[in-house]
Amino acid sequence: MKKEFPTIKTERLLLRQFADSDLENVFKGLSHPEVIKYYGVSFQTLEATKEQMIFFADLEKNYTGIWFAICSADNATFYGAGGLNNLSKEHKKAEIGFWLISNFWGHGIMKEAMPLICNYGFDNLELNRIEGFVESENKNCKNLMAKLDFQYEGTMKDCEIKDGKIISLDIYAKLKSNLIKPA
Image 1 (cartoon, rainbow, N blue to C red):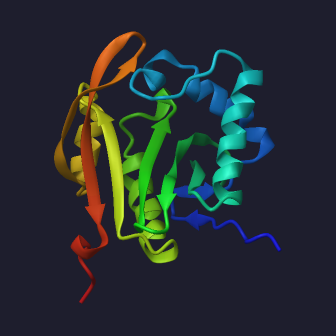
Image 2: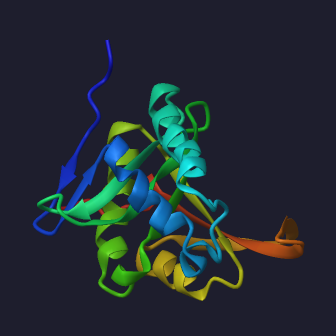
Image 3: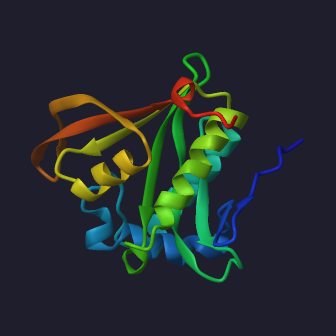
């Protein structure tokens, strides 16, 4: 029996399961030079983007995470994607990731969507820790992590090669024990 995929809705946003009809929007995001500048995945063709759609489906199928399509509340506009992957049940942690189509940058969409995804991870996936690995030069993402109350834990210097260049990654984390509980 297939587990029901959750949807999360606010007045402004709908976080839902990816559909085949999202392929063009995922390609639009993950082929755009500004969107993928600091992102670890990019695609040159619509056909190649199907690999990303399989990745999203496999996370759910293999219980290794969950990624949401982030849309307007009426589901008419696709904004981007966000979710949790590399989920470790043993260590009760997962890695957060997200991207947004550039037309929607600066509208507070991720500031609203990411806490919903974190809360889903803590409450439904029983996570204790959510990690974010951010390229050290990605100032916008680092600012967002701070706004989302992720704590900077350090930098892994010169730890990866991307496009022939050695990069460093800043490590951020949010712990369930640090969440402020309503009185």
